[in-house]
Length: 258
Image 1: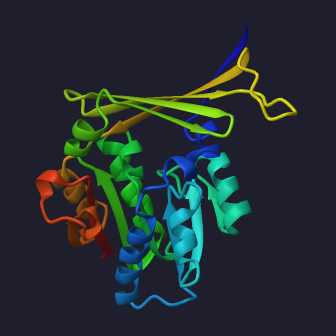
Image 2 (image 1 turned 30 degrees about the horizontal axis):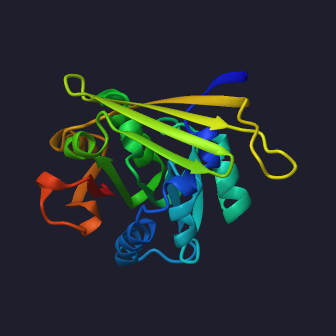
């Protein structure tokens, strides 16, 4: 049996199956929430809006008829889908080093717990300062981050397995409560396809990605937001889907640049 094992950066191999894996995520609801906030802030069709950690551009594509969208992500593979399949303007960049001019963007947002990929308090503050730098005066920043409840209940020590075409994905998660870190290991096994459509099970390629996320305290995030130059306009949970903070998956903050 021929087995090839490869380790890649997060969201490289995963990009190929990402949209199919996340089919049940309420992107439309998130986009509607963002639109309502930006519409109340009087943004128009000429306003530039930045999607930070855009991935394949699912949320940005739903807002592209209202604003001039800019998709930003560290993964070139994810951005390839955003550009080729959704026609978005894309920039490959780190969340703490956005290559944009001072006060060039009207608003920004970051969904699906991208902020949790910032590994510590300093990186989170650097990110918030960087976003604040790129926003125009009075600019809006909307972002969410995962709760500890969400990680413990739905991810800790759980394995997710899926098949998409000739790819089989296994996703294993472990939560370190002491250090507030989530370690996710994603193995994607790819089988070449015979001309008749059958798989060569004796020959396969295993691609592994390692993801590490940090769980932040709500009050800490709010304090760092103010330190970075923002005012907290609103805080809610799960984009208004539920009312109980104790059982929320995501904390959502709406900030305004002072």
